[in-house]
Amino acid sequence: MAHSYDYPRPAVTVDCVVFGLGKTDQLQVLLIQRQLPPFVGQWALPGGFVRPDEALEQAARRELGEETGVKGVFLEQLQAYGQPQRDPRGHTITVAFYALVNLWDYQVKAATDAKQACWWAIGRQPNLAFDHGKIMQDAIAALRTSIRHRPIGFELLPQKFTLSQLQRLYEIVLDRPFDKRNFRKKLLKLDILIDLDEKETNVAHRAAQLYKFDDVKYKQLAKTGFNFDL
Image 1 (cartoon, rainbow, N blue to C red):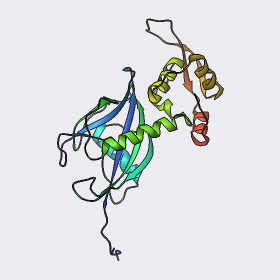
Image 2 (tube, rainbow, N blue to C red; image 1 turned 120 degrees about the horizontal axis):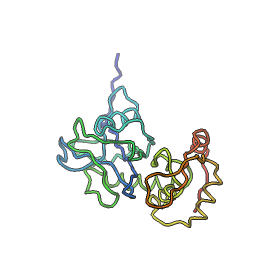
Image 3 (cartoon, rainbow, N blue to C red; image 1 turned 30 degrees about the horizontal axis):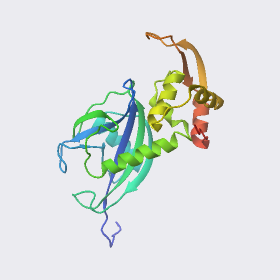
Image 4 (cartoon, rainbow, N blue to C red; image 1 turned 90 degrees about the vertical axis):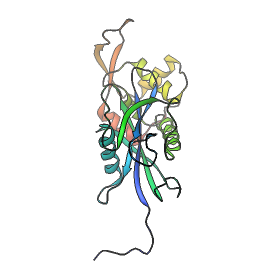
């Protein structure tokens, strides 16, 4: 026999703040243009309602895949948002996640209730539906904190990268320049990189050494953390 609740229950949704970094040298966010009410035609974070048989992360991954075609990415829970008036359809609590992808690997494609899906440079994105602007800003703050203590930023890079690309990643995310020598000294001290016997190709400047991260040490540091205070 099903249990009867004495109190009304709000709806539950998930929303995903997907950050990407590509050849544009800018941190970008993946947005969808809504095809259904409310806020028809406005841009928003990909997401949707949680099904009765779904865990939160499962729902987030499903919605992200359905609306944008992005699958199998780094995904971490951010926080919950539950202001009663945040959704004109009724009291809806959303649990936000943030994801990190490199734009070399993912081609987005709008589907289900999304009219369009595309990347927008942070700071140049349109006004967002619901409270998604607030959620996006919270996710940026969380990313800037996490990247100093965990190697999650590597998710924004191609599989093989140069030290200059890695430094530029930190500069873009943290919005500040770093001394090249000091950055490399602290980075190499983490002992997380594998020096490949390869160099860049098809570049106008002197070809730089390529690296990749050590999977075992990456997973270990992702759990234990570190202090990358620059």
